[in-house]
Amino acid sequence: MRPEQKVVKRYARRTISLCVLTLAVFATMTQTRAQPPTDTQQPGYISPAVPVATRKAPGMKVRLLSENGSVRQYAIVLSKDDEVMSGLTEFAKQNKVTSASFTAIGAFSHATVAWFDDSKKEFKLVPINEQVELVSMIGDIALVNDRPAVHTHVSVASSNGTVRGGHVINAYVFPTLELFMTVYPTPLHKQKDEATGLELIDPLVK
Image (cartoon, rainbow, N blue to C red; front, side):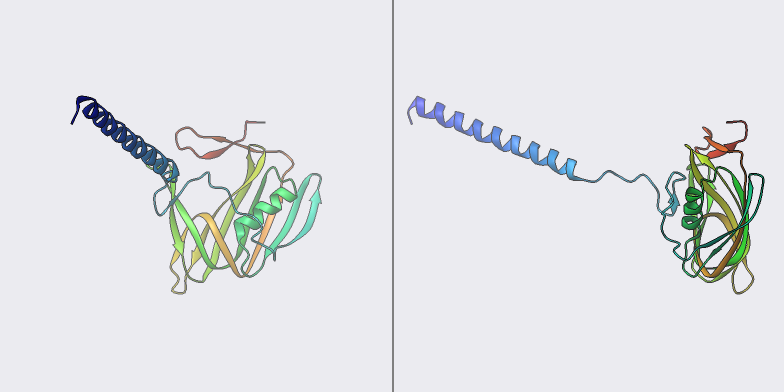
């Protein structure tokens, strides 16, 4: 083989190697970009920042019971399969609620309550996959970034009388939920607590 042929052959090999390396790098970059972002939320936990899904309480009925000055009293009844957090969030938005308190009784076909795990700054989920009686429900509504946020805790009893409870993530009504709410004229605002990451009511914020 003549010297010039050897040079051409060597050059061709280097060119092919460079092309193969370039294609490999490009394929790796493309695959990396195509992968979805890693979800840091752990199984069995939920972030406090997850928004409430709306339009899941089509059977909800509302009646204004009294109005004393700017304080309003409502009866709110949710029907079979209505989701409680969804219905109350919709009610608060539609009626421009800026602060309120409420209590309720009734029953759920199933629900998810939670316990705040400070070490993870997330709620640990506690699924309730059975029909339960609502022993107690207490909650409030205040503003987060000028939008009403519903916060409620429950205690529920199963068929053997065992009581469980916690912070409500979702709760599906069966056969009814009877709730009485007082809406106040003075807005209450929530501020982010740096220690926990939770939005907490600060009555001094106006």
